[in-house]
Image (cartoon, rainbow, N blue to C red; front, side, top):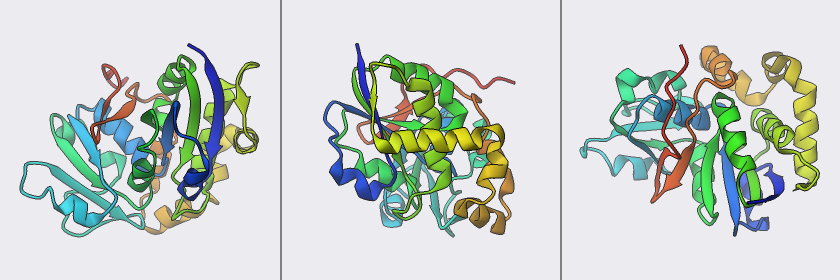
Length: 244
């Protein structure tokens, strides 16, 4: 198998301009949906059902699912929780299916459904993810969920970190991939300080959830790779227990 190209989509609004056939789409929502999805599946969640709208999530009420909803960084009233990784602990999600809707991440997943494969990426699973991507055939598109169709720093920097690990002589990259990689090089010595100026970081600090930022910037906390199967995110392969 040969990886042919690694490209970066800086916003879901740009997805119509990308060819998704024979493409592995990696959906990235560092603060916090993709991070929580990786963490939740590693902690034993049976699956996570991503839906775009709050009404879609509510349709699962009374059917034995955990319902999670986030808008503008805050938990939507009346739901079990939102998209903080601290809500996806073994005590809360092990053996359960979570139905999740978020401001950006779950909508980006819906837009990627035409891809050959859709997986989730985060710093929490970056080594497992990039090692798996190296063995894929065809094309990889790193899809930044962004913020309401705008580019955001944290997703772009993560995309650059993945590009940095996948770069090889035989792999082509687009301009967005090169730009993301260089942005990552500027930030990698101190991600937390660099991203302190990111708009979503400021939004989360205003909501007093700075601990989520620190958690989501940890590398290799889990080895789980969420993959979309029949509308549900499940572990691509056996989830490795979290290192203590």
